[in-house]
Image 1 (tube, rainbow over the protein chains, first blue to last red):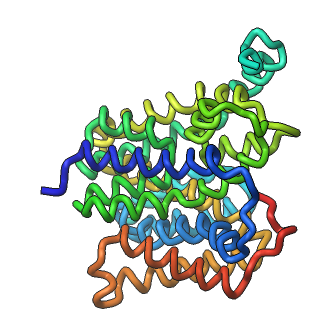
Image 2 (tube, one colour; image 1 turned 30 degrees about the horizontal axis):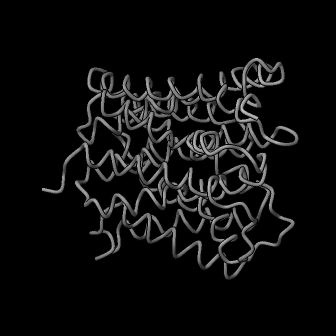
Length: 102
Length: 246
């Protein structure tokens, strides 16, 4: 019953757009509350980290290939390889390692 | 007043040109990642049109991915609202930051479209500029990057089903690579962020195997973990005013 794709996508769009647009249109003063400020600051790092692991192991055919991509990606990102290069490096690691792992 | 943001103004022409130029590398990066996003969408049973439309409307990588994850696990609408909120909450911060950098008299319509164009990369390109932000620059970025983003998702939806499984497997980690590239450089600079990323990895793994919690959907687990870890961090390591670099 509650699995209509159009509604799913509409919810995605409405919530995302509201989040992006409302502060810029409504808030004209600096946020002063230190807890909210700190909480908001940490959110991107934690969400992205939680979504990356262990999901990266489940995205590949062989979980080990996912772990290898994670490790190599971590190293590449540590040395500031940039968004696009890190993404490509991870893909290559999975592609090559799965020749040996599967 | 009405002509402030007209393209007849040479300053705006320059801003548009600079925006278009900045949009090219951003768009190419988006293209590869959105391809991987399209594969995730196809896994949720979403076709190329749905994928392209949702990408164009949301223009958010982690958010789009999280949304497709909810769809593929047949989550509830409420779960979707919650998930979108948490996956995109960082944009609140960016949107707030932009609100401090635009002309206080900037008309609603420009604020609306600047808000729509808030993404990690376009935001980064904007704040790197000096002085008051010109919405025309953001439009330049968006004109290049948004169609590539949307087209890449559609292509991922289609090709994901046609490509050999080996290639799909490889492409599907592009998104995670991008996530890593977003979180690791700041983790290198800040011990707190480093610790948070490590704790997030560990707790996320534990929650995926622990009894009871692992039976919750991945989306809900992400929301719970984010709120718990960030609240703890905000209490233990409150940020001082001066650390507020973006």
